Image 1 (cartoon, helix red, strand yellow):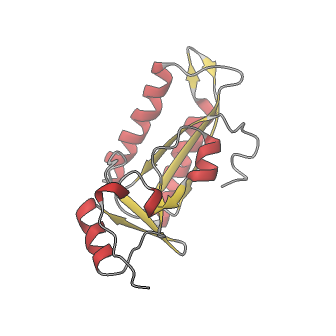
Image 2 (cartoon, one colour; image 1 turned 90 degrees about the vertical axis):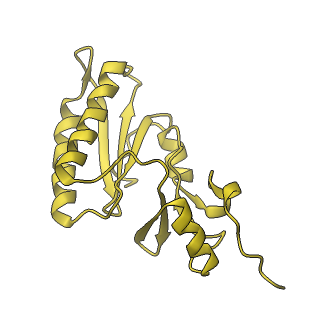
Image 3 (tube, helix red, strand yellow; image 1 turned 120 degrees about the vertical axis):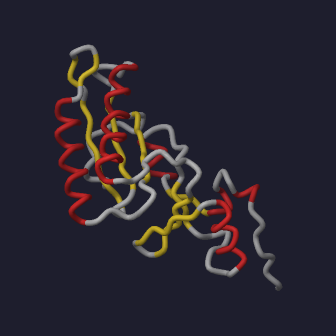
Amino acid sequence: MIQTFSQFPPESKIWVYAANRTLTTQEVLAVETSLQVFTQSWTAHEMPMRAASVVLYNQIVVIALDETQHSISGCGIDKSVKLMKDLGEQLKVNFFNRMQVLCLFSETLQTFDKHSLQLAINAGEVDANTQVWNPIVANLGEFLNKGFVKLSDFWMAPQLQFLVQAK
């Protein structure tokens, strides 16, 4: 992933979408192909945009946009949102559920909602140190440094009850 965005400044805008399920290899290839076509032809007010994208863990789509030459406009952003909505409809996945929590275990993501996450905490399957996808990063630099955070640092942490470890 770092390679994909290695020529982009850290302040590049990003959009991160997480599917509500793991995509198959064929689906990832279809998404990557659509994203590549889109990013190579993306324009705002008929000005070409410098963009790149990547699919991580067969579930997270990251689109980065370097605005050092041209700024994005509302209509340019709308084009990317439409692409993700269309891909979601084609694949029968939801890329717009910001309430899902993706926990990283080794190289695999597991999807939870708030209730099932609390159950996993109660069962000892997830703890405060579990790495979770952080959907509220604002730019590429933040994504590269804080794209995954400990659950205890996650925006939802105050709403969860962690098990107290006996010393």
